Image 1 (cartoon, rainbow over the protein chains, first blue to last red):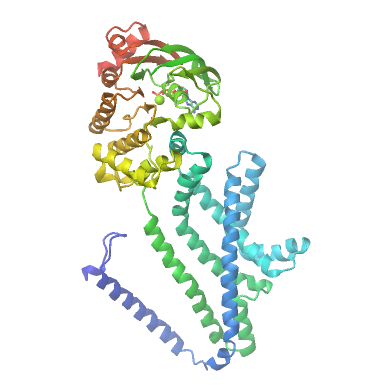
Image 2 (spheres, protein in one colour; image 1 turned 90 degrees about the vertical axis):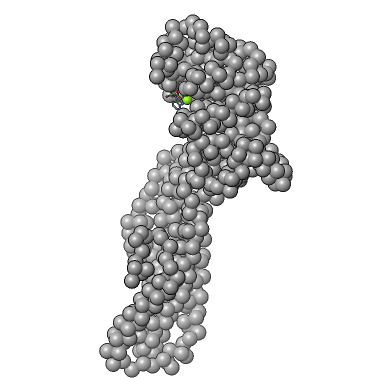
Length: 259
Length: 243
Ligand SMILES: Nc1ncnc2c1ncn2[C@@H]1O[C@H](COP(=O)(O)OP(=O)(O)OP(=O)(O)O)[C@@H](O)[C@H]1O
Ligand SMILES: [Mg+2]
């Protein structure tokens, strides 16, 4: 029994103990869900769903595309906001503060609605996919800005002094000193952010972006098979987020070094 | 080497760190700068190293005028080996990579050449075992020795040390001071700020005493330490030598 207890978090775990423990967890959760579903008295109708398999696939791919695009744009926004937040010119700095605080202080759903019905409307942006990507990017960008800012600030002034003393130019200092440390620091939270974007993108169904969630809702409306529509939905999201979460942990271990 | 300061002044906010320092330091191989805390030692050293620009005045090194434009200072800094109190090394690079970075990226050596240089220096200064460790895995003394190796690897015109042992415990202090004494023994030119009077006396042939932004006394170390003239220096030496 002792080998199933780790005294301290972070200690290496024996392979046998790990496999057995995971097996136990899988068994228990399967038993729980089997019981729940067996009590359901539900007439499963998977054939109806199977006809719509392409709609699921398209929605899933759309979610992936929207999330990837949003990650990229949010990185750019986050980087700009982080630099603006460090600007010596106060109006620029305060704009960044305002942006970060407003975005982090309001629900994403509200932001999507306002962006779509007010801002996009005013500026004549008609493509709801673009508005969707923009909404997700602005949302994630605010969180990234804070991560990037604290990443930059964690690099001590003494390192910039050393870089100057050995004769690196400003560009070289960014290239060889600041940037590699930022990437190492940001890689794990960035992958976490990507997983969040994927889940958050389901909210875009509210402005009729045909992503994974909206398509599942539509299939449900056509077939009246609620569970058969939403179970693949959950599975589809896990299929994206689980590998990302694993990757993030691997990177955390790989890139970890004390300063 | 020789140094010549002409009315050098440096101000931080409304605090005058150096006031009109004018001085010609005759030929020396090793210069020690001593004085009370806040006196301006680091400021003077940073001006020599090309890391700080004075408000007024001029500086000549070996008869060559230092031009305080960013462009000139970059190449000036590249020709000098500077070692600070602590945290000289980049934490994401191993000891070896820390030394190789300036060799390759600043001085244009090939990677193979740089590796050979590092190999030889690490071998000589007994750091080979630590070549692939990151700074956090090294003791303070080892970190400083790697920093010194990085400084000498580029074949600098001279070396600059600002209290290189003040963050170390006594045992590691000895290890680093021995290293610096060895470099001096090889005939390298160096300028060092130190609070360790015994070491300053032993390693330097010329000495400056700086307090409140003024050079109050300068001379051959043998004389300056045995027959201090300025009352503030007498006082200072009596104080630091008491313990
Ligand atoms: N970057 C700076 N900004 C503001 N004041 C500074 C700065 N650098 C130095 N000073 C001030 O200038 C004066 C001289 O500082 P300096 O670091 O040259 O002294 P020091 O002789 O090296 O002292 P210590 O022995 O404590 O290192 C001090 O009063 C210090 O507070
Ligand atoms: Mg100092």
